[in-house]
Amino acid sequence: KYNIPTAGYKVFTNADEAKDYAEKHHPPLVVKADGLAAGKGVFICPSMDEAFLAIDIIMNQKAFGEAGDRIIIEEFLSGEEASFLAFTDGEDVLPLASAQDHKRVYENDEGPNTGGMGAYSPAPIITPSMQKKVMNEIMIPTVNAMKSEGRTFKGVLYAGLMIAKNGPKVLEFNARFGDPETQPILMRMRTDIVDVFTAVIEGRLKDIKLEWDKRTAVCVVMASEGYPGDYEKGKAITGLEEVKDMKDVVVFHAGTILEDGKFLTNGGRVLGVTAIGQGIKRAIKNAYKAVEKIDWDGVHYRKDIGAKAARSR
Image (cartoon, rainbow, N blue to C red; front, side):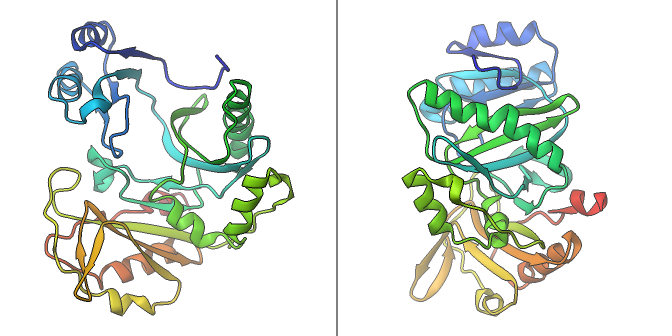
């Protein structure tokens, strides 16, 4: 309706109709559960068999419950993914620093999608001219569209983007901070976030200017064995005390629980180990230096977070 660029798509509530549609379109295709699925409801399907299997998993096997009552079949967009977060008070839009997530569970972007295995900020793919394009073609029109629909939005608007050859396209929107992109973004943010929140609530975001640490930040997600599938909980985590006093390192707890003074695993993505450094290579080194000190039975993490950005430097 508002000409915000996205992939071509169609929505289905019937598995057989979805399969008929898929058969008429050449793979690769993207099959998505239409509800919230903890970042796991998107299937990239290089073949027709995989598209049919994804439809079955979501709609017939009910892998995501009611979130899979409706599915979306989308054209596959090729390019590089980026996360674009902005504050808005419903009138003005203030972009945060750029970031790039690593969605697949294994190195070299292989394996199933996850909620995110690590991120870095800034993202070289979001150049100043690209940022301007995203703001003018996506973020500002979306905020204006919501206002014109009687749904004025205040808060954090997060666009998951594909930076394709013909410009940025929207993969998804979230009305919240994005995990794990927010960890490296906030490591770099020098402005008091409470002042920003207050300005958003009071409708005076135009008075705020965000200040950033010019250094690079990298977050490595440490996950439970088996994630994004089934995993065990209750594994004792060691090494957190050792990391606590490391300079320019913050360990964000995601899936942990404190019992009898000890931290145990209590989720799929357990920790977001985030470090800042002069340039991407130093930030990567600092993050993995901390990661290597932390351990539990079956810990899993990607060893190539930020490698793409490091190669482009």
